[in-house]
Length: 78
Image (cartoon, rainbow, N blue to C red; front, side, top):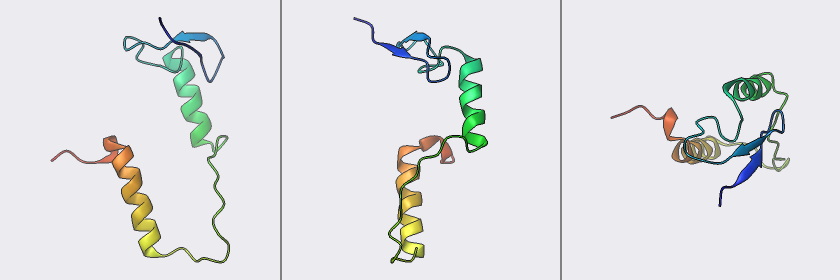
């Protein structure tokens, strides 16, 4: 059974398969439109920080490490 999802940009039905290099998007065009929206800050992932706790270097380092663990394409090859 093939999973069908909606393209986040145009809401067209998309089959979730390895052959679909643009998944979850239906096309490169929709993928680039979404990327542009993120670049223009039309999409945001917001999380409130505790207002009484200042941001420390340790917090920033921990967030950066967590990000790099989940996004290996930002790490330079060895």
